[in-house]
Image (cartoon, rainbow, N blue to C red; front, side, top):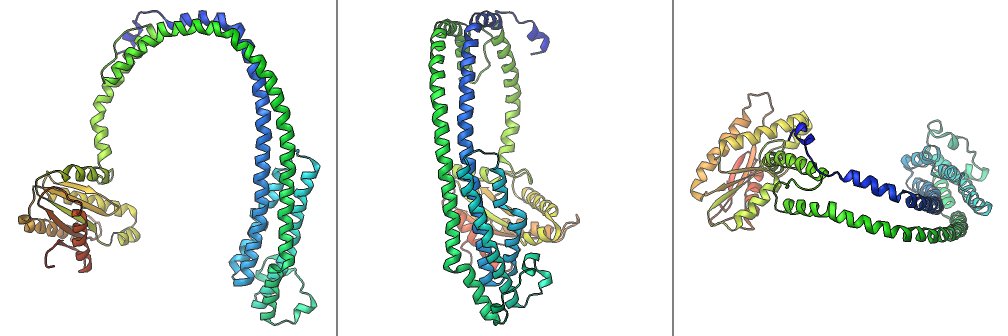
Length: 455
């Protein structure tokens, strides 16, 4: 319906009635809104406290993760002597910097000096371990005979102790492993974990105190809000009656129309009449588009043949059929090489070309489907084994076209496996056709084979 037609609609406006009810309720709602605002403020404070605890927990976990990652990388390096682990160590130390970033993020959270002290100790212990870890990596680099100029500055600046300078490469490597696996190293790691846990315990105690304070304030405000709600009850009762009379009844009519999938009746207040006319306009447009949408849902957007979902539906429908049929499973030979060598755009052109040749070569009542990346299938209804030669001829014809392209696309071919069914689409039909396809691939591809033939 045009805008001019909608403008001529007559009826009682619900909006006018709403203004009258809102005016009567506004004073009471102001009181209720104020009480709600107070609850919101307290709630936000409560949530902020909880979020700060979660944040502390997450950042503390990051500190531990950063420390553990450094330990993991240095241990892998001293054991395997692979440079990638040294690179991983210094990437964490200089770029990722989970520990330092986590500590910076926690600076604006006031959780008490004791908790902060625990966290600082955890960081300090982790940083102290770095000296031992870097020294161990320096020993390994020396043992490997690495060019020190190519190593990170921290490694180059390490001066080996006199008792380590004359060790053999094997002894240096052994000393390095001992430095990051011995009891002293593990004790230092456990101390980091302990300080992190002490930090979280202190934060939890602080959060509990804050939450109890906010909960008490919330309880008081909610008590006052209940009084306001009781006063509004009478006014709400009147509102409900008006809603039932002016809104619910027309809606029930419209719901029934929608359930019956028909246009809405033009009834009710002005707003409902306008809504019904608008809905009816959309209903007509949707009905016109339904066929197009169904086509898009059932067909492959690249090739235009039916997609895997429609193919599976067709299989289910044909299971109960009494008519004979044939199933062809088709692979594009060496399609990955085409994609890799010529690019995906050329690969897409090949798939569209294959789909067109299959659609043009087989009967209009046959169902051509794309069921995978380079995999197609054809269901030939009312087809018996007597049509073997016809199918073979069509397959050879398609392969002849694909092997001798005139459109600038690269050569390709199809491997086709065929299986017949005397009645409907049995459960093992796909497996039989796939078995025939496998035989074609074993025999050099570019051909057609029938299940059970020459077995």
